[in-house]
Amino acid sequence: MFPVETYIERRTRLQAKLSSGLLLFLGNDESPMNYAANTFHFRQDSTFLYFFAVDQPGYAAIIDLDEGKTVVFADDLTIDDVVWTGVLPTVAELAAQGGVTETLPATALDAYVQGAAANGRILHYLPPYRPENKLKLSRLLGVHPDQQQGGASLDLIRAIVEMRVVKSNEEVAEIEKAVDTSVDMHLAAMRMVRPGMVESEVAARVTEVAMAAGGHLAFPVIATVHGETLHNHYHGNTLKPGDLFLLDTGAETALHYAGDLTSTFPVDPTFTPRQKRVYQIVLDAHQAALAACRPGVAFRDVHRLTCRKLAEGLKDLRLMKGDLDDAVEQGAHAMFFQCGTGHMLGLDVHDMEDLGEVWVGYEGHPKSTQFGLKSLRLARPLQPGFVCTVEPGLYFIPELVRRWKAEGRFMDFIDYDTLETYLGFGGVRIEENVLVTPTGNRVLGKRRPRTIGEVESVRAH
Image (tube, rainbow, N blue to C red; front, side, top):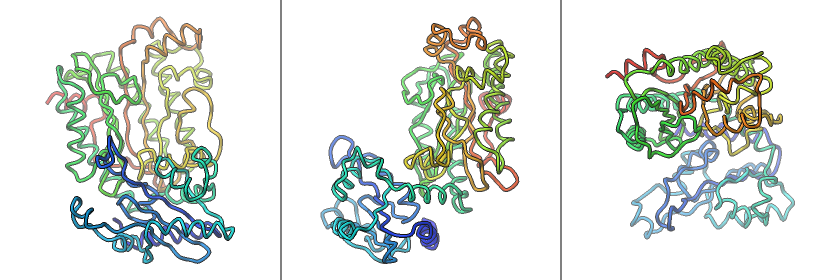
């Protein structure tokens, strides 16, 4: 964990943003895979980690603004537990790592919360995303799980978002560690891929690299010859000559900070001429987006620039036509680029998504409902200390092509006859992780092959 002073300072800043009541934080519990004692890999709630530094299941905490104290609630292990887990730090010892000196048994949380409620005090809580925490809130507050999202404290959400969205130097260093490991994962995949392999072999190799570095995966591996499927977690396809392989994977460090990179490379040693042309369009858009990321620039404008750059390349390939400004404004480019150019990155791969994209990426402003643009997770003006992804792509989705053509959509902007010759092409995405600096930005992590020549140089060996 970071130094204890880091967590004390974070809680002090949070308390200064709210005036009264209780701030309730529920850590995560173990989540059973197929029976109670056989659990999934444990992952603590990121906000709990951020403020309390406890990375064990079964914890909760309260910051009591009115009484000026912080309490951690959990139970020490019994001897029956120790037989299976070995000796672990006590509740008091773990709480002390985050600078909390007062602890109570887990059962005391109910009385504390209910006593405060009986006295008319405000209880601020965050929107729950785990079923077990929804049940806890239901027991504590008598609020049905379906109503808990709406009852979450907007004041607490906003305060935490504005704290976590700007990364400290120690956080940036930890994210960069995650990115370095993520680069190693991508290099391992680029060096091993050959025709006849199965996607699962590549997924297994990058998982090995992440875990060997002392952490874990930041999110489920996307390793596929069907890169047109944006979040493709199926790993059963056999790689064939002529295929493009898309790898979207990242490491999570032992402190749970994430990296998130995407590489696209040929299964053969070199790209085909058509693959080169599409890849270069994405790379040019990627470079333009990187150049635009600087303080004060709204990321929505970075996204629009990216879309315009992609459309220019597509017009050169005769896949798009007509006035490109009108095409992008109306969303015709979303035939090829259905998602956003990037998102926040930190303790979560989509940082603070559990607190709501409208607050994290939009500062409370409404999101667009337009196809493609509605999937943009980050639109707000960039500030020094923001860490975000930059990940343009081109995706040739046969089902979308057939649907839009049948509906006669964007006939003035899309050349469907040419487009049909690209069905089966797959998808291309290039993704880097970027720190916004006072004068511009810095790509985090060690250098990864990005240009066509760099990629082919690795593939040739």
